[in-house]
Amino acid sequence: MHMNDIELNLNINFVVKDGRANIKLLTKDDLTRIDMLSILSGGLALVIRSGETPEKQGEMMSKVVEYLESELINVDSFSDAYFYKKIDNPI
Image (cartoon, rainbow, N blue to C red; front, side):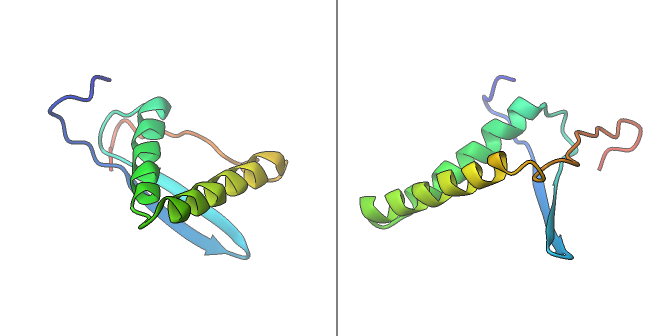
């Protein structure tokens, strides 16, 4: 997707129930996984860059790396993940 003069919406629904996080990415737009990854990474970079000092930015970056490492190493994390496109009735 060429990101030039467009507006896309990607909503994040985050619910914790019984100690497990349920995350849904919702969009009406025809976004691929790579598109969603680009949007979410851009938002993450924006939050990290909002740190008042390079030290604060470094702390936030370290937290992101630690979180990703813990999730990707844990065999139970994302074991029930799926990508679902509802074509007939987009949200």
